[in-house]
Length: 252
Ligand SMILES: [Zn+2]
Image (tube, rainbow, N blue to C red):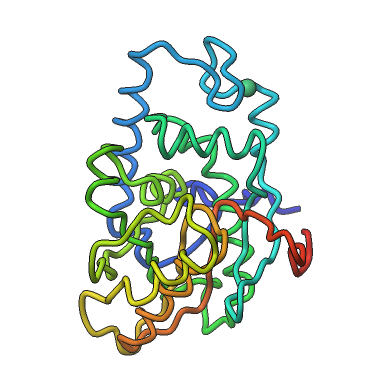
């Protein structure tokens, strides 16, 4: 009988050999630890419901437990760890815009599950699924970074034991996508990203926090492909289901 652990100790969420994970996992973990330490010096209430003295209460923690599903927008196929709304929206809102960087560790398992589901569909070229992939994220406008003091998606990835490669940059200033309708989001996103360098032969896992219309991720994929890269898998923390046509794919 095998006593082999389900996950190797150096793979915190069992994601496996995404190449960039190894490079600076320690640096990412240190950043996450610092953010968590900063949070502990302030009075804490539940990021989901406001209950005092707990960073995330047991009920809200259960509400953000991973429920990965396959989703799609246009011809973009992705996996999401959670459905956006209610408690999930409150916790993600606290994490992204409420200064609650400490919540990254509570949300990380849902993103990790989404990434695992996305990588499971990548054809294996030897080794584990995801071997040789780089992780790309969508850059935040400088004003958003200044306001938050941290980058939410890279912080989540660090809590998953992964690190993104900085390959995309904003081609121009653009408005925050929040609060815009679908058409406005698409126009706002279109042409808004550009690769920092040629990426011929590079294969990517593209990761973002909340998938709504998909315009941001479609633009990120366009920019990566325009630079010669291949986007093999897309994973998001949460998906806002579209009003018409519910989520596609399995609900495993
Ligand atoms: Zn709560």
